[in-house]
Image 1: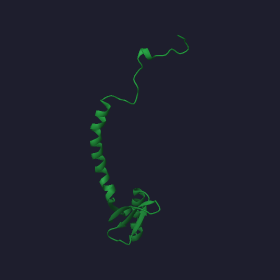
Image 2: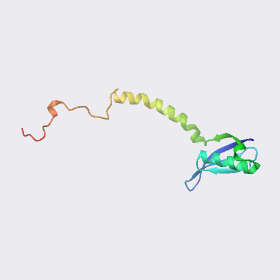
Image 3: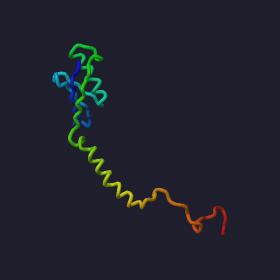
Image 4: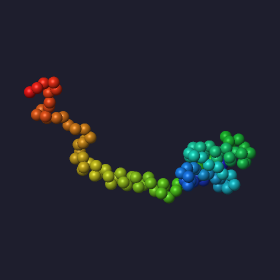
Amino acid sequence: MKVTAVYRYERQPDGGAAWIVELVEEPRCHTFGRTLRAAQRNIREAAAAWYEVEPSQVEVDDDVRLPPPASRAPGRSRSRRARERPRARVAGGGRRTSRPGPLPPQRWRRCGTSG
């Protein structure tokens, strides 16, 4: 048996978040999960109970829908990285600046000697 599940990610006013899932073929059959994997497992079990079959007999076609800000995030991060990459090369001058270089001989101090 093949069913289509629609997943929506929702944030709750209390700060929690969950994946809300419902079947396209039967909107009265729905569930949730704190993670996408948990929601996928739960909808398979819910569909099996609804249609009175074993969970192994249920094939779920996933339709995951991200909220608008999250669905645009991958493109924004790629374009931001592309803009920042040339700046990082210019600012560093091609050298690593995280470690200081060796001290010149005139700046060496001899430990334990006076002089």
